[in-house]
Length: 128
Image (cartoon, rainbow, N blue to C red):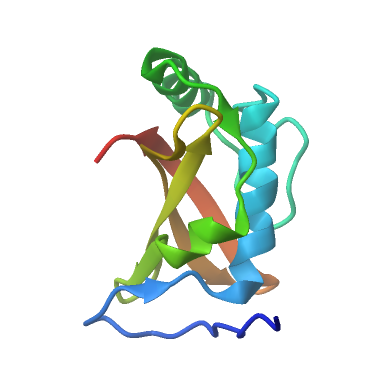
């Protein structure tokens, strides 16, 4: 089955699926979190550095949640969303755990356009 490409849209009225071009970045971010690299020491292209404070909050929230975080399956794109807020997009990526599958945890991020494409700022991991 061929995946349908989802393009970046500046629609300020509707929540939209995560554009195809952004998905590999979020897969890499979650892979780092699965490996307990909450500060993203692996330096992912297109991702802003994560402050020590934000990394600690992410670590604590995932640990307090009490489930083992796993890599993002393709199904995550069926429920993860973004919305354009004028100069940036707010993004919510559904996270998955070994025990639950799709969990209540989400990765919240902000994406802005940059000279090299897009820049992802990780804001938090939490239960909305």
